[in-house]
Image (cartoon, rainbow, N blue to C red):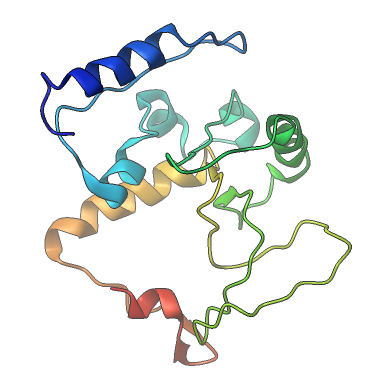
Length: 174
């Protein structure tokens, strides 16, 4: 809700503040208005130290990770363990924006949701980010946010999102 005095909002904030978290520091970012899905994604993981280190070696940046869980998600208790293993294995990749819990089903060139990947449930590298349980790369994410912040005021709409010369479905969403 946008009403800061709403008793339901106050209950939600109190619950989040009192929720026990034994896995390191817990930080709550309270908003005074609804910023929408895009606004939430673009501002949920903006730590000044990340921007200072964004162009440095991945080893220097690898101090922790963030997971973006939307309010209608429920993650497995073993997800964090799996995610830490994935980051240990893939953090040096230069072509990785993040790791996701989502099983990819979207065919980016057509928009069909009938993609079936049969590889014994091994990680699958795909050029369309999965939004479910997304954990942005601590090197790539600040670079993306800088790029987005620079171009957003200009009204920029990506025109280079193509697969074999055909626009991918995400470019059609703009």
